[in-house]
Length: 207
Length: 207
Image (cartoon, rainbow over all chains, first blue to last red; front, side):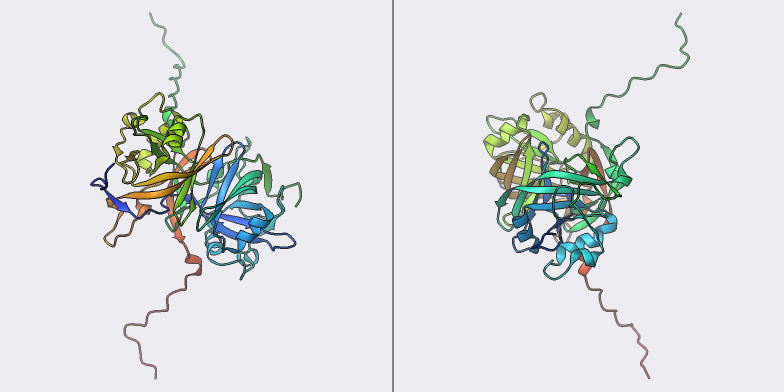
């Protein structure tokens, strides 16, 4: 441990530098008390495989905070590049001032296991029920269990595989949105054994 | 709420479908008790802006789990496309069997505020101290405060701006690694007012 970074590095202000992260449309509300609403969240991540859980972090002053806090439900809708502008807009304006579904033209679709709406146009809708709430500082983290998932039929191939790479997902990096680019490999490619050479079709018999 | 998804959608097994997510090299150890080690984590995310906090989720059976649990420290190192193979490899083999720094050729560099090493070759190193540990199921979530950041001098421009988009970051989507692609816009672009038209250089006087 030393107090100066190595020659190639500079000390930077401690901050949120973990990138790329998702930028997702979180829907909530749709009850008697609350109209359907949308909020864009980048502080989101998977946190447990079994049971499947994710977390989103929301500032308490946001309109959606009270909705999620009181209803205990939300849907994480994965947007595509076509929805970049709507995704950005839902992150900068408030549901107190706008009907975000109406203004964006996005369609509220019924959830399978939750009362709040999903976004029809997003290829994946992850329905979540809050299991734990942590007040961390500027943000409150909602840890939630995934109770249902809806996926776009267009992305499911003949073998029943979900081809999410075809959806055109958005990544968020340090205040900027990017499409995904070049395919680099699949999980485990670094230890995959090369297939044995196929035998020649007409091997010469060794004498 | 209904039990059948809309026509364009199919119900999918509830699972971890939040993508893209980061795939980061987490370094830990480097104390008397523990050698320096690396583990690749995709279940990671920012969880609070102030104080800056992030979370990583680790299976308790992983070698790094005990190290982080006991030392309370780790570094999130952001890999680039050049490090895709090393990133994959550190996610599929165990530190019990391999010296991962030695085998990958990655260089342990001193932390500024933590005792465990950072990865010199990664353009951003986020030094973290665990503040809360949650046992969620298959994974344990370490919620940590960012105590220091090191950034590659090459990515900092003449104005002191960190140009992270030049680093060549990796995104992880449903078992596959991708480079980032096309720039789509900056946060807030959807509400940015168009700049007023600049006056013509030689405006014709109106008669």
